Length: 568
Image (cartoon, rainbow, N blue to C red; front, side):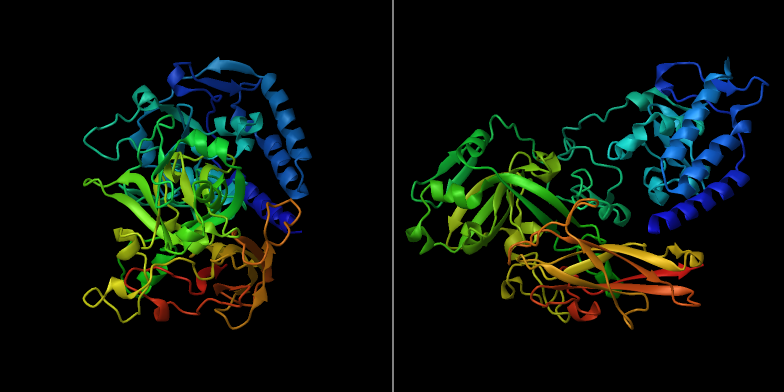
C-alpha cells in the first residue's frame, strides 16, 4: 500500500512537471570529450523529438501508478522503436562549459546541472519526477558517476535515454582529463578520493558523514558512504612491506606481516556498527557552542568486518594467566602521524580484548573487500560496541600493558563532563576515557524543515537505533507531537527483502537496528515535531533534552532526536 501511495505521488509530479515543461532540442547521450558531433532526433514530419514525448510520458506515469516495471519497460521499448524510425540530422554544436560554470548550477533556484561522461545536463525539471526523490540533488553541480556506481539500475539503456533528453552542452576537455596533481608540500595531497555525497565537516584532515537521506537506505552501509573520521593524513602503506608489531608478551617484540595475519589465524566476520563519539554534536551546538566537528546524525555506520581475532593472535604469541595478572590494557598505535612523528593511538581494557565474546578483530576486510584507505588499509582494529575512537586504523603496533595509552586522544579527549564544566575548569584526568557508548537513535527521514503532503493522510518515518556494549535495541518509540503521544516502530535487523536475522546472543548485539513506521497525520496539523527515542536490553533510554547532557566537547549527544516538518 505504501508503495502505491508513493507511486501516486510520483505520478502527480510527472503530470505537473510535464505540463509545465518547456520542450527543447535533444542530443543522444555521448561523451562531450570524444569530439563527436552532437545529434538531434527528428520525426518524419520534421518535428523535434521533444515535441512528441506524450506517449513516452504516458508509459512512465502508467508504470508508476500501476506500481510495476512491466508497463514502464514496455513503453520505453516502444519509445525506442519510435526513435529508431526517425531520421538523424546534424544540429549546431552545443556550447562548451567549464566545471566551474557547472558548479554554479547546484540548486533549484540556479538550475540543477550535472555532468556524465563529459557531457553537461540541465536536469532542473527532472528533479520533481526523479523516482529516487530529491537525493538527485546530492549530485547537483557535479558528476553523476560516483552516485550511479552505487545504484547499478542507472546504467540501463532507458535511463541513459532519459538523461540524453536533458543535454545542454559538453564539458571542456581540460576538465574532463584533469587529474589533481600531488603536492609534495601538502601532507594531505595523497589522501584518497572521497564520494561527493559525503557531508564534509573538514577537508584537512578529512572528516565526512553520510547524508541522512542515504544513511538508512541499506542495513549495511556502503564503504564509500560510511562516515570517515580522520585525525591526521591518510598514510600510504605498501601491503608487501607492512609489519604489525606486538609488545608486552612473553616472546618479546613480535612482527607480523599481512600474510601472517591471513594465513596463521582463522578468518572471522562480524557485523558491527561504529559510531563517532561526536555523532549528533550539532544538537549540542544549538544549546551552546562546543569544541569539535559539527557532526549531524551521520557519523555512524554499519558494516561487515573480517579478519583475525585479537584474542587468537595474543594467545598464539604467549598471552596467558601470568600476563593477565599484570596487564590491564591493550594499546593500539596507528601508522598515521603528525608532523612530530607522533601517531594516533588509543587503548581498550584487556578484558574486552581477550574475551571470547568480545569479538575484537584485526580486520583486513570491510564489506567483503580489502579495507579502503580511509578505513585503515591494510589492517585496523575493530572493537564492537566501543566508541569509534578506539577502533584504531592503519594499525602499526599493539602493546599489552599495565597502563592505558598515554596518547592525547586517550587522556585529553573523548571524555564526558558536567554541563557546568568549562575550558577554564576542566580536568581531563578526572574523567574516564569513553569506551562503551550509551543508547542512541535518530530520524533520517523526513529531514528537518521538509514538507509533508497532507493529502497523503499519513507520514512515514525512518531512522536507526543502536546501543554500545553489545546491548540490543529492543524498542524505538516515535512521536509526531513532540512526545505527548507515542507509537512503536518496526525494527529491522537485516537487509530489506531478506528474512529477519536471528536475535544476537545476549551481550553481543554489535549491529544497529533500522526502524520504520507510518502514522496517520493529526487532523488540522500544520507543523509536526517528530521525535524518536530508543530503549536497549538493559532498559536504558535516551534523555528527553540536550541541556542536562551538554558538555564542552559535545560528545555523547544522545537526547531524543527531534525533527520539525511542515504539513501542506
